[in-house]
Length: 291
Image (cartoon, rainbow, N blue to C red; front, top):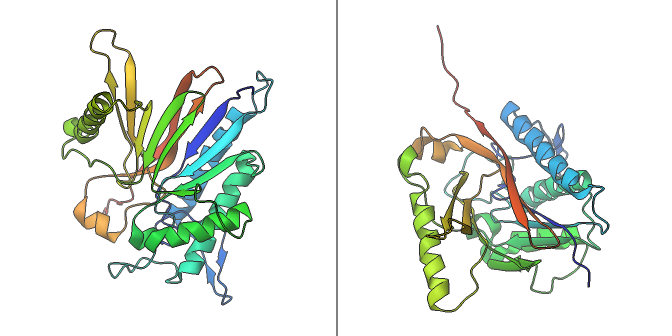
């Protein structure tokens, strides 16, 4: 079987239904006929959503390939906001409405990227239960709607995705290491987690992934493990950006951190050569008050 280029898009932490998260379109019409108008920050997020998926489309439309590339979309957890912690920044407290908002965003992504469910791949990685629902029930309903099926086969909603593509192994989960408390130690927890996982794979004779990918922190961080002699990269790790600004909880606990809005995109060529790009922006939502 001939191999093809794979383009892998990994959006995470959409938190659909939050007033500070992604919502597509000029307005949202509720099932009870009410209307919600996106804020200015939500318009910025939606613009970045379009930019990211347009870039994905450009990777799929190259004329240099004889075989049509395949698109794999792995949504890395927390697809909706849910109802939790007396959260006040909600567009709606109805989970089904939040799921509809997420589905609309994904259909926009499908439209821009040219996603074809007959050839391409969609998977959801389980996130936090207060967001995705107990047993990832919201992610399950979303995936069924997007794929147009009544039930799934157990391979679409996954707690821990280990996916090999053209010989390249990806290891993706929602929860992972945290962040260093200083700018110069920011990547330390991720680097230590990578080193620990690398030696675990060696000791237990497990395959070493090329990419170790985690979400949940809403901050983009990357680092790697290199061979001590050759300097060649053996394992690359990522904490993924999100599709939400800081909510009121994050504003009080992480005052000086800025929102990272975007997603990681990985390309795996037919021969196993691989490279990546993170299409994201950093946004300061705290305004300066002047006289």
